[in-house]
Amino acid sequence: MKCLGATWPAMRALSLACLLASLLAGCERAAQNMYDQPRGKPYRASPLFPDGAMSRTPPPGTQAYARGSQADTTSGREGTEDVSRDARAQGATSLPDPVTPAMLKQGQTLYGVYCMPCHSPVGDGDGRIVERGFPAPPTYHSDRLRGVPDRHIYDVISNGYGVMAPYGNRIRPEDRWAIVAFVRALQLSQHAQVSKLPPDVRGQAQSAMTSGGSP
Image (cartoon, rainbow, N blue to C red; front, top):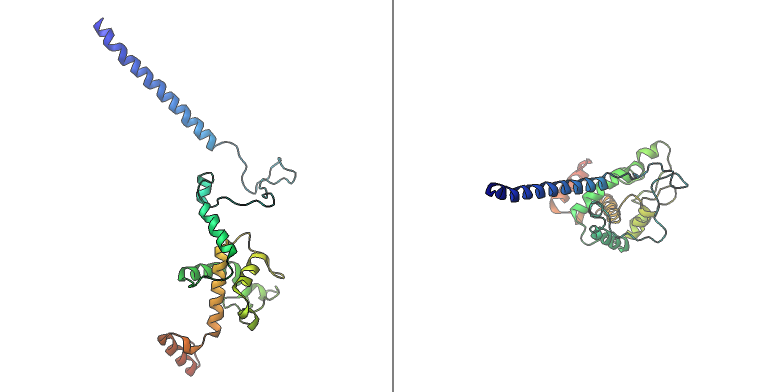
């Protein structure tokens, strides 16, 4: 009897452990089912809506609360700073002072993707697409475009102009400002005053102008 009495608590503990393990396994399966449940994917067709598209346009006046990968993985609890940064960039009227090298580098990269095919590497409006018959954009180096406010260039990127398509739906506000910064750098590259260049660069430029070559 003593042997049976000693065995019963152990058997009961083992039974409870098995029950707990089975419950935890069931919870894990339920959680996995939530991740793997049927759902629509962006840009796929769907019979649920009259236009047959799965992706829906937000109702007019919708304001984003969060965005980005952090918002995607936290159900919108994080990613609010990205929205605030967008709002600050959207409300800006000019480039920050000073413009950082990182901002110029980002602007150069995005300019190469979105702008260079038409505007050319130096911004004179003679890009590869123009060579194939597309209407030429104006050169950035005209007196008019050198004199426009920074916000004008930002708004053209956002909303388009003439035959240029709007890019506000694919380039973030802060990245549009980075492109503006790089456009200003292109303009400066063609109109910089030699007397205002750093001494080492000034010497190279003067030597190149004297010899008729490039620095």
